[in-house]
Image (tube, rainbow, N blue to C red; front, top):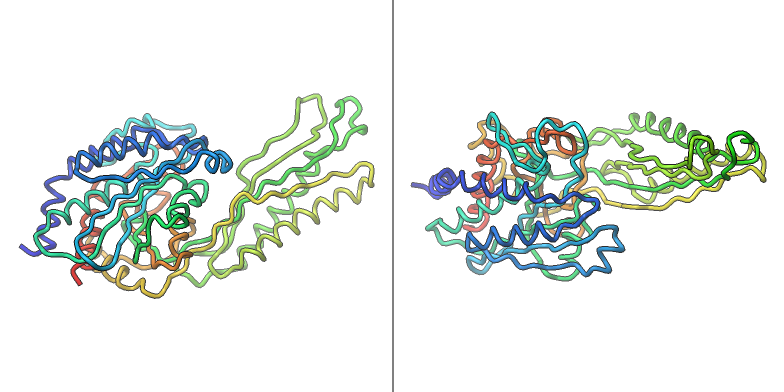
Length: 415
């Protein structure tokens, strides 16, 4: 048997265990917000211990976590040294957005039906806790002598940007990998992704009784003008195109709006949160300034019609600035190995391309570490129902992606 045959056979023989492992991970909720994710890390460490894998538990200080808007974060690192040489890190995140409404199955029971596992984070990205763990276990069973090390990085802050996940591990010099494979997609290897700017905009007016509205300043009416201006700007983004395959154009989303006191009160304050996706060619500082300008100009237009005494004020607070991920020198061996084995296992070409998502893998790239996204994730985000009801993972994708990752690790560590 070749090394590849040995790896494939081991993964086939232990696939029921891999599926059971993933089910246990899905059954521990990690809704973020509120972001109380240490219990999941402790359960993961317990499950890994049963595989003779020691997970270092790196708890982020409470003051940092609370200031960040979350409740608890404990990041995990598993280190397996085969010999001197490069360190390859495999990173997946355990935090997820809350399930929301519309589920036809329980979001945390990890039900299996027609070859698919249903549950929040079954596809993105607790699936790759399983992919990477069992790829490493298969590698341990290989008789060929290998060089270098593999690290598993299981982190809990991707939904808030990753600064207290991979960013915290890197800043505290708890890891210094040579290459990184982060949670991704089974049908392509991702080498670039969008950046993301998130803002909270608060429009302050003056409350008044609805029977005498002229005594107040309607913050909602002013916010409506600002929102119209932002949506108009969003339509113009289609004229800007990226040269990265898989990425189209910038876009903007208003994801949350709050305001008002009661139906019989003129709203004195309205706030909304926006998400602006930036293509790799854009400069974040320029995008930030342009969005702020659109908001301020629209607010000024409202105020000009009403005079100084009846004006609103606007506060803009940046919530997140995630830079785009771009390919780094040294990435090609990762890409080549994944494409080679992906085509052999999946029976189709695995393109190298970009994605309109943003991820915390960018933080490895910002530290100068060549990184790609590849894992048991779906053919498309839409297909997986990620961040929607009835998120699901095709178990055959889990099986095949585990083989691709194991084979890739073998190639990189046998050099």
